Length: 124
Image (tube, rainbow, N blue to C red; front, side, top):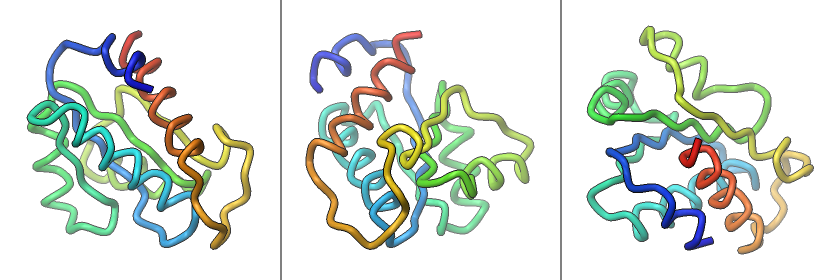
């Protein structure tokens, strides 16, 4: 996981995540919190449940915007569209992990897979 993050050295990133209490939403949130820990001062985060103005402030303050949607409903991408913004990269947790949105327990390796995917997006 750390190898994927070590490749990323340019600019600040806004991570906008799903805020669903489902497994997919919790995986998205845990990935964002982990990135906050590994890249302090370089990552800013907002959940989709935050007021639109707060999400927009986070998004506009970063060099890149990364969206982690929990499922194909794409709540985060829809909110970005309302602000006239587009993501520089996007992950859909259910698609990436091949899981169904449910109340299943979150496993650490699932969070790691999302973080590795983020690292690949940022390396592009």
